[in-house]
Image (cartoon, rainbow, N blue to C red; front, side, top):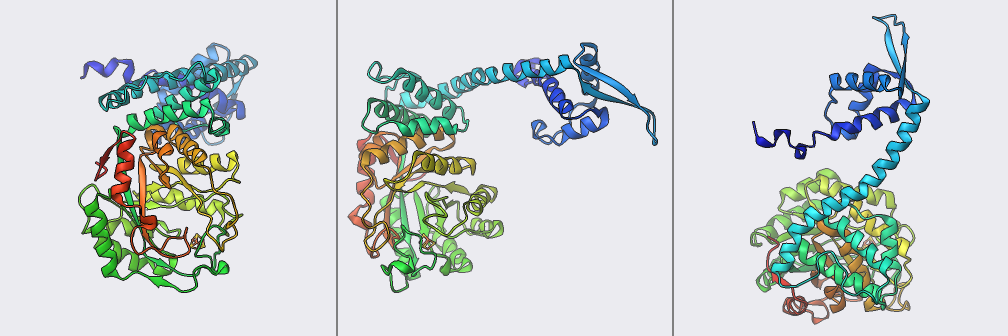
Length: 474
Ligand code: SF4
């Protein structure tokens, strides 16, 4: 028997919360003991386990004695008579008080969890020599104290691995990207980056394997058939792909993303991935970016050496694309279920997107269990409907990157920004992408690094922002 078997760290006093659960269930409808226990067994509260039957009957008797429950005896045709439990007036008052006291306990518990988790992360940040203040805002008094408190609250939740709340994400997005408040957000986001990643950054390489004029005609995509930007299908040969992969790996890419259209075919993609996976060193992650896949197709890709999938609920989904957001959300949820890492950026971000749209895109990534997030700006390709749209200011891109970092916390150690704006790296993004091949954000494909931005350039940019740049993710 361990000395800790009777310590509160076992969570043994959690059954105290059985009382509000019993009150809430019986407030819905009076029940007899057996059906009450059956209903409780189905609740996710018990993580699929069976509640302690003897303990529950004991608790019911106790609650009856204290006057919060009353009982009536009902005759049964199939056995002995049964006791029906119902909530008394006093019990309803008790339930209301439970609601209030549990709600106020949540904030306290979050603080305790964040403190425990944050201590471990803080050591990593300090070892990295960043000298960030622990849990304090360093820009006061110039920053609005309410905003600084919000930043600290979101940071604590994120470091505790708790999901961000929509209202908090909206408040962070609402500040002027040029303000002292945005600078406060950025500094704290950079601190979170150091804590959750050990101050490590990586470079991804993305290779667009094929392009075809696509009848889905997403408004932001150069491949859209209607826009007439890409008129001929084209695909890279297997030899060229393998050569390029080797080049990227030798240069130090820690993630290798192969982007294919749905026309490429699932079986061909699996064969290609199997071959590419043999070229990657241990710790270099192979990622597929393709159309929505079934669970079995995802599992087959995993068996072919794929470790991650890039997929996203795009900004303006169903407005700027013909895709159903609900189906997209379901497709996202399948990715972690297949045992694959989900990479989901907030994209393609333009000046017209509201804070609500941006927040919901991030929250979709969070709800689906994405381990990689961040933001990608839309490239307004000539010929597409967004050709004349103004470019997104770098500061706004950096602000959204900082929000995804702060809110993503412990669960999202990799935050990517595309294009690699230095301000966004200073505000917590630690992943930069180098691309080649078919690029849906340009009017022609790239035969060398897109926009001549190389892995060496990416590594330099990340190092300038104080990161240790690694060639693998481990
Ligand atoms: S984003 Fe994908 S689905 Fe939409 S037009 Fe481009 S290739 Fe087709």
